[in-house]
Image (cartoon, rainbow, N blue to C red):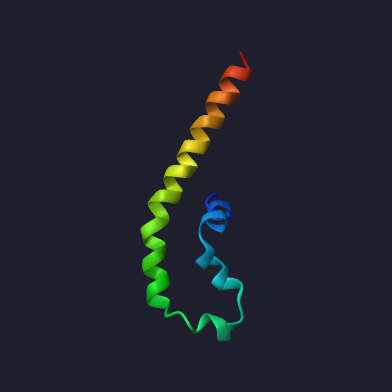
Length: 64
């Protein structure tokens, strides 16, 4: 599983469309969902980097 999956689940409700029955999914055109995805990828990536840095700093100080 890619590292960003948990964050996408937390932050983006429209990701839950993937788990819905196909009848519900057809209400939203795929094009819109693709567009929304690209918009937030950088945001998710920034959060991942931030959390990773914080964890590294914590581990560094705890191990001293």
